[in-house]
Length: 451
Image 1: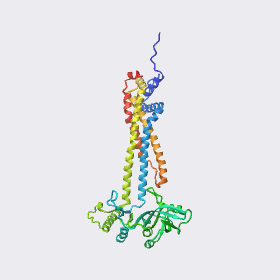
Image 2: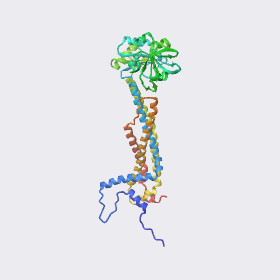
Image 3: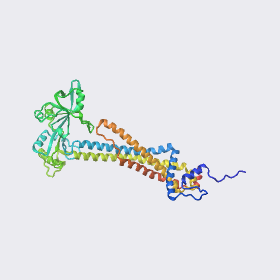
Image 4: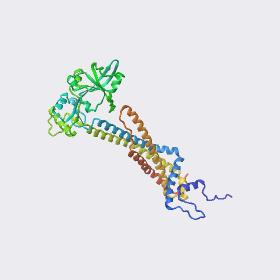
């Protein structure tokens, strides 16, 4: 005759009891346990977290797969915010390199939108001459006419950006000289064939040879090198050290440049808004534009400043960063849904275990707390890995960008890190709550019969 089994829990039952009932203490002959309510509550929290960690380690591969979506989502957000911050700093830094008092007169009507057909030719060389003669609101003013030409010295040949301008461009663009000097107003008046070259052109065409006094050919026209500009780096992905500056009069004479210029740049001698308004009035008078209301949409030119450009570029960078971050956040949502699905599978697989633990004394809140803790540990752990991975990717991307665009600064904003980790924790609570609630509502008797 088979004897009935003694009704004593086995080792796994004891483990289950310890996990879900961390506040239960064995009594000894000395009397009741001396653990206070405060210390019991502290132990409850730490035991729940420890038990959750053990549960995740027991299914490590599945836990890593569940956290992968969070890693990708948080990492993408960090990359977008970091690159956006770097781009914003780069743009603002390069725009501000012109100086806060820099003003530009450009062709085209109004203050926004593409130029009207034919508007690219509305700024003339004579406009610069008249403004320089008729107003003193600018301490320096230079017309700029751009051409792409072939520069040749001996057997060396290079395609470069040629700037036909005046000596004032040195003050407008804060140019420093590495060798020689800039061409003068006398060179401008006489339309002399002289050139100031960038350091990269000096290296590519002359190597270790001193370029001063040498003659280079620009589209088969000979020009004497009188100066070399100090290194400037890149600006908006253009190498400023591959520019050549010549008198605009020589460009018109030797290279048959058109009468119009690409833009006029100047440095305001009075507050920028007042200088801009004065220049608008002068340009309307020069172009015969009747515009008593000051409606800029009626003009065939634009008067802007470096401060306005910085504000516009800054706004564009901010909007673009937020847009890309919103797109990256979709992967975070997908990761949260993945966490919920994995937790639901875990609840189903551990139904019998949950029933056993509840049968030996675990409260529903203990079950709820453990599964919530598992979800939060998954998402926060994934968030931390995502932050580290996103920061590393941003750093490597910054190194690549720096090769093509100087002035790039690697930055991972602290508020972005805190936001990412906080969002990960919130995702764990949000997407882990339903599986945890479902686990806590299991009927112990039904759960123990589950196969």
